[in-house]
Structures are given as structure tokens and as C-alpha cells.
Image (tube, rainbow, N blue to C red; front, side, top):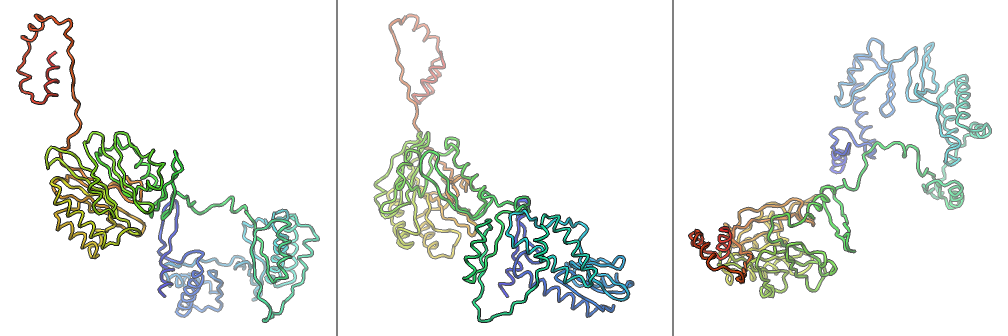
Length: 546
């Protein structure tokens, strides 16, 4: 019953690019819909017939078409009674005209207290059948004639009506380009009954596309093996001319795996997203903007994968930045890296990288005048499928962080993907990770999910510092990352020394007029220069005097 409930309450469809959930009824085309619909209709008609005040001498129903007999003065009352049974299922009605009433493909008429039947066709019927020149098997064309002829024999209850129907069918067949011999052979073909042989080998049906001349030969070859071949057209006019469903464009799909090829080399990027593919590709385009347009001094990355793609080293340089990378040792994938603005003085700390070499980490020291302006920035990555176990990794991480908090007296920044989901506070690994940070006086600054898929949201990318006040702002950058993780940023309140231009002046005294020079200097307000202490500012102030 639980599975049945899921099938009946989880019907979704798409219309005009939007997704909807069906609130009432069953899904069209679902195998269970036929059974459920029949149960509902039987329940409605049993309640209606057992509680109505009218006398109903005749009640016939086929799926949702009903044929009944009611007194003329009781039609409205009985119709209203039917519609009161279920507000979501409302009956429409059609009353006989001139003693005739259609039901399915029968036209029922009454005369002299008796009912007569003949074939019924809607007023919009065009007499268009499967044409003899159509690209279909001959068996399909013969079946068309035999089916209509057989229907006339079953529906027409008099010799006169059957004769009229056969004459009409002959005109229709001729109109659809069938010759008289073909019509006669399939119209007067005797109906044979086949006795069931319970011991016979069950017949297997194989459906194949119809190719004239070839499909018939395949049918004859498979017939001795008790395999019946059913032919289907390769492409029909209906398939070409009608398309009532929304097109499932690849860019509109969700939960996809996609591949982006590099336009400059043979490398490619394979990604997975649970969101709309168009949204994800837009995020990639946004991420490929020039980094120089973004106010970032340092950019760190995880899973660079440059070890397996050395050709990419020629394409990862960013104008205005220095690139530093450390590839994974011993296995494919992984790797960490960083981009540093060319205006920042730094040095790479490979001595720290040798501490806990089993971990993937890279360290950069930003040189400053004192402990309040110098900073140590690390990039760290922990992969779940390879490397250390979670507990072993936490032990190595604690040892590394403890060493740095003791030996380093400046600002400490740690960025990266630790695969430690901080949105699961009850997890033991999370508790130990948080305890390590608290014990060593470190703080996390990212609180929003950094990886969002169709089924989950996780916070596994972190920015950790040893000072809570040095971070003035931090957040997630939706769509900026080129991977399945979101980008994260932090604004740091620290004065970082940058390279300053130095002036070198050369005075040419070949044509110097000493008397004129002394006279000019006596007229200058030299007190302006006295208040300047920086050599560069002094030179600039001196130049403004001329």
C-alpha cells in the first residue's frame, strides 16, 4: 500500500518550461491508473444507483461512457444526483434526438418499443484511412479493411443496415486507393476460430521497424521458431507534425554530468550538478571573468589536478598574479594551489609543508613590519576516497596546527576543503574538529553551505584564523567557483606592505648658472618640505614647487 500511495501522490509533469505536481487524479499512461479509475467509477455508480429515488431500468458503462434509460421528467434530478457523489468527477449528458442516441461507435435508435443499432460516426469524420500507398506493411492495410468490416457485422443488427454499411465502406476503401480485388479478398475473408493448445510453445512477439522487402523476409525466417514479428513505422506524420510535450533540452535538465572541453588544449573538465544545467554553465562563465576585475589579493584552490595534466601549467597563469602549486604525491588527482597578487611581498614556506608530509597543504608567508601586519596563509585539502582516515587526518591536523600556533606570532589563515561537514554537529568527527580549533584558539568564519547538490547541502570548505577581529566580512560566492563547490571569500583588516616605486633623480649641471640657482632657491617656500618624512613624499612635494 505504501508503494501504491507513492504512485498515486507523486505525479509530476512539465508544461511551458515549468514543473507541476498533480493534486487530483492519476497519471495518464500509468499502468495503475486504469485499475484505480475503474475502482473509483464502480464505487461512484454503486453509491449513486443504490441511493437514487428514480427507477433506472438500464445502466451500461464502458470506462467513462455510460448509457442509461431515465424518464424525461427525471433526467435533471438523476443528473444532479450523479454529480453529488464526487465533486471532482462530474458527469456530462447527451439526450436522444429524433429517437437516436450514440454510444461508443454504435448509433442506438428505438422504434416500435424496440432498439436498433448501426455504426456511428462523428460529424467531423473525414473517411481518411490508412492509404494503400502509405509506407506500411500489407498486413496493416488488410487489417484496416477486415477490422471495419468486422465492426459492421457486430454492430449492425439488421440485414438492411449491414448492407448499407458495407456499401459505404467499399466507397471509403476505394477513396483510399485500394483496388477491388484487395477489398474483396479482405472483406469476405472467413473468420476462423483457433482452438487453444495448452501444450504448445508460447509465441514470442518481436517488434521491429518496418523496412519494405526486408521486414517480410525476417517474419518468414522467424515464423518456424514460433516468433511472431510485429512491424512498426520508423517515422509517422504524427511524430513529425505534432509535438505536444515540452522539449527536454539538455541545458534544462537537472541532476546531470557534463563535460567542458578546453579551447586551447586537449584537457577537459567533467562536472556534476543537481541543479539546472543552464544555471551551472552560467556560473562557469561568470567564474572565467578576468580575475583582475575582482578585488582579490590572494586566491587559494583545492583539487588542482595539475599532476595528471602538466600541459595545463602553461594555461593557469593569471595576469597580475603569481601562481604557486603543490601536486599530490603517489596518486592521481588532488593538489592545492594559490594565486598571489604581484603587489604583495611573500615567500613560500616549504619548511612548514614538510611537517606532516602525508597531508596536502601549501603555505605562504606575507611579509610585514610587525606581528600585526605579517600573515601566514595555508591551503589544505583532505580527500575522502584516498589518503588518511578521518581520525588519522584529524591527528595530523592537530599536530600541524599546534606547531604553528606556538611557532608563529603573526596572523594565521587556513583555507581549504577538509570534507568535514559542519552542518552535522552531532557527528563525532565534527565534534573533534571543533574541539581542536577551540583548544588552539582558532575560529571558523564560514557558516553557509559551500556545496549544494540535488539531495544535500554541506559546509566542507573553511576559512580558519587565529584572530576573530581580523576578518571584517566573509560569505559564499554563489556560482563563482568552476567546480561543484561554491567560492568563499574573506576581507582581512590588515596592513600588508606592497612594493613602492623608488625615485632616482640625476641632475645635469653642465649648464648650471649658480647665481640664478641661488636666487631661485631663495624665493621657494622651503617650509613645505620640512613637514614630510617619507623620501618619496619629499620628492613629490619638491616637484610641486616647480
